[in-house]
Image (cartoon, rainbow, N blue to C red; front, top):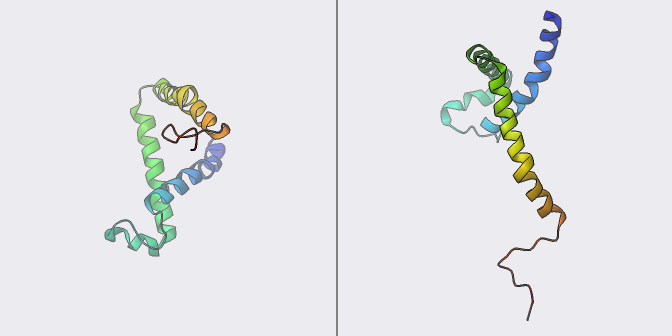
Length: 108
């Protein structure tokens, strides 16, 4: 059991760390704040800190939540809203020959 957890943590943490890194540092040349400029010079230390933050947040959530049904209900409500309202509209706009309502229908 412990071996499977140890081997899956890097697989699960890498996409989350990559997304967090791209969110905090969208440009790898300029930091979003001058106090964070040192983090661009040490990418290995930055990735270790990011993984530590991700694992700490996951651990705190797992300890703090009374049951896993809270996570399932939040995930289900978010995904059902996307599936019911947002995705069909996006698919219609993408697949149809959609025109803006303010554009004239007939050219003179």
